[in-house]
Length: 155
Image 1 (cartoon, one colour):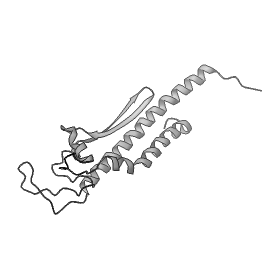
Image 2: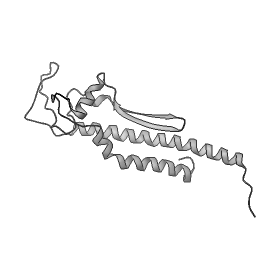
Image 3: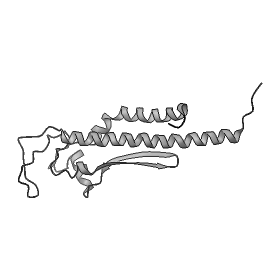
Image 4: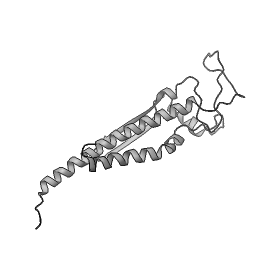
């Protein structure tokens, strides 16, 4: 009382589902990247400033008050905040996302994240804490993308 399985149909079905899983994972990762970038920018706009310290940059007429060490960097010129981006890459059986900055001086974001070895810039982490904060959101979004593809068809 068995039924015959057409292996070519099964193979085509699995290839189709696998392709849709990767497409939906890429879509979910794009959504996650948008959220992480948005949260990074929000944290920079709403960080606690060190009002006891100020300095002027690039012929500015208004003093900049940096964030307190170990808080996200406070916006001064907006160069870092305005260059925070994410990209999603899909290459065959691999889907991955990158969040970072497209700033001309890529080391600047690293200096703020980790501080400088000479102690001139104290750490003002902006990327790692936001990624950690969004860890559950990212896992859930990707799991839903896979589950919906397997159970619900195209999405």
